[in-house]
Image 1 (spheres, rainbow, N blue to C red):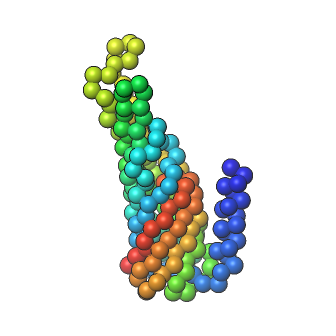
Image 2: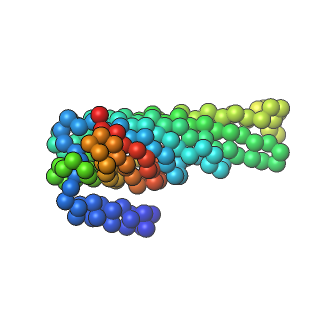
Image 3: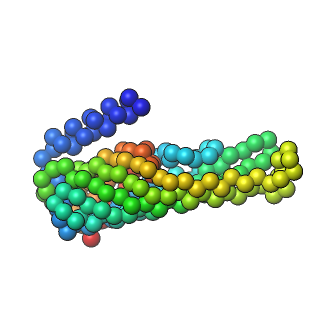
Length: 177
């Protein structure tokens, strides 16, 4: 945890020292990305978290929006294998650090949502008590992130985030709407 906080602090410092940002009131950003690592998964990761999120600029320094995503994992025991699916739905709020320009955006934020978990169990499996296995345990999703966006054109760019919630690291394409 100490290393993770150190990485977050260094990223925040690097982003803060840059003197450009592509954010302002009224700017809407659509991020489509792939994540690495997902908290709360069962077994081995299968399909990495893919996400789509929309942020709406409501103030010179603040934006709000939502995020949806999907991921899967599997767990094996003896000759049996369970496959888990995760549908992520959440609301996000972000604070934008620097003065606006047209190419850079540096931000940090929080996510509050719900992770809908479903499981596909092996046919014919029963436990020691003669019952099937039920492991559908959906849960509340709380997260935080820091990230940056860079625009190659006025409406297309890339983004990267570090955090806890959807993925520990998320990278992808950014579209300014």
